[in-house]
Amino acid sequence: MHLLGGVEAGGTKFVCAVGTGPDDIRAEIRFNTTTPEENLAQVIRFFQEHHAQTPLAAVGVAAFGPLDPDPSSPTFGYITTTPKPGWAHTDVVGPLREALGVPVGFDSDVNGAALGEHRWGAAQGLDTFVYITVGTGLGGGGMVNGKLMHGLMHPEMGHMQIPHDWDADPYPGFCTYHGDCWEGLACGPAIQDRWQFPAEELPPGHPSWHLEAHYLALGLVNIICLLSPQRIIMGGGVMQQRHLFPKIHEKVRTLLNNYIQKPAITEHIEEYIVPPALGGRAGVLGALALAEAARAGAPSGHQQSAEKS
Amino acid sequence: MHLLGGVEAGGTKFVCAVGTGPDDIRAEIRFNTTTPEENLAQVIRFFQEHHAQTPLAAVGVAAFGPLDPDPSSPTFGYITTTPKPGWAHTDVVGPLREALGVPVGFDSDVNGAALGEHRWGAAQGLDTFVYITVGTGLGGGGMVNGKLMHGLMHPEMGHMQIPHDWDADPYPGFCTYHGDCWEGLACGPAIQDRWQFPAEELPPGHPSWHLEAHYLALGLVNIICLLSPQRIIMGGGVMQQRHLFPKIHEKVRTLLNNYIQKPAITEHIEEYIVPPALGGRAGVLGALALAEAARAGAPSGHQQSAEKS
Image (cartoon, rainbow over all chains, first blue to last red; front, side, top):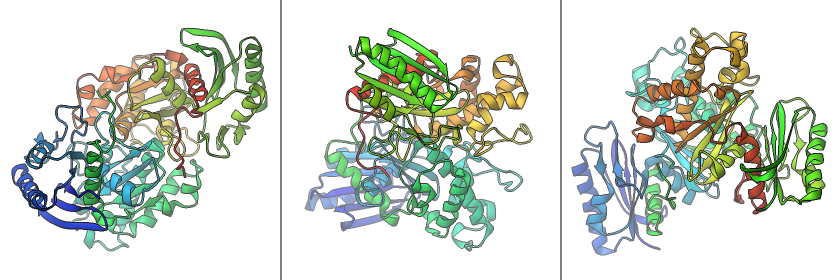
């Protein structure tokens, strides 16, 4: 087994690991997300220490975005137009490749987590599935036809528009770009902002959770209608409230109203919308899976076609 | 070139053609959609006449749905749970294969049209794009990573949920399953039902068109956020109102609010959301493209994986 490095580059924290898979993590480090200069130096220092002992075969980075995952693009490996202060147009892959001299895989945090769940978790054997994270932000990635989702860029699922009943919920939404898009209504900070309590302090019977399940279910219905996934995996801090799952299952079935007559939805929805099998480790393990793909010559989790706009 | 047969099986009419591609259609017939028995007999009679003169290498069917496009399923080739009276659980492929003795390709009308546009039209060279039809119904299909979209079943894009301002538009929607889903708000019959005029009789300056463009744009924004397509092709009867395109372009850009910084959207949206290059012939030509794929051994427009739920 080749030794790999993985970087989960999140909006609030970085996690770096060295290992070969979920049962063989040899070292791990966490630090807060600050500036590109400081964080990239921390990442490089961590990997260089291990690289000096046992050479790493490749490194993978699963990062917040928007970013450029297209290896044929001049800005491949950049975090691009993120609103996060200091991080717009940051070359992430270049400094790592230069310092370590190994292939560096790069994709969105959610595509990375999706690849990790496909390699070792709840999406093994599937070719079309979605991974959603609900936390500081709300995002989604996944595979269609056996390859990670890219297209023009990469999905930005959190920014879809869903119904918002202003009478029932006058909260205007948290998204600086779109107000009450899916992320704007249902991400962790939106819960806190709407109820003036952190999500983790709201008890399971609080009305906030029915509203949250309702918004999450609306987005999932759209994902089901647009992508027809074989499974949806939901991770992130907010989804650690496991009582959300049965609420979401019920609301998705109610909203679909038996239109899509597949037993996976009509009979076994609790196996259709599931938590990550890798738990909170989906992110950093996904980065390891990206490293594995990069070692095999696919810098963005799969072979790219030549035609990109 | 192999001679192929194509069937566009629509909810209101059938179109059958014999040929090899857009520049070589040797015969064509149209008839109204009535019952499965009558329509399948008409299809078989048409192809048998030609088959007796010049053998057909394969036939393709692009049909209304929901349907089963999975060749590994016992109900492959069926229209399944359609609400259309008389058509639920209809085996379409079986009778054609039996009568003609050739491979029969089968997929949704929109996936068929997408394949036709990929083979001969506005999606040549792309690997991730969407084809939308807005007419009697509203549906979408397409390709992701170079293969037609299937997954658990096939997309049912018309049934996604979009924001609906009941004060501005008290119309409750036309969908029998979901009321004001995308199709329920924006399909042709919804326009007629809301304004009490057929869409084609409403002048371009009528407020109906701004509302229609608004609803269509909301759905397109969700498609862009969820799928990141390299292009979106919009066909169907309603989209023959070409004045809708600039209205849609403007509204999509306004709704996205510069979040997705790709020149395809920010600078060249008129080349990003486009009419079908094959015009009203995308459907039947898509069926020919499905026939071509079936002849090559891919009964549903592409090679299937073994893992389907």
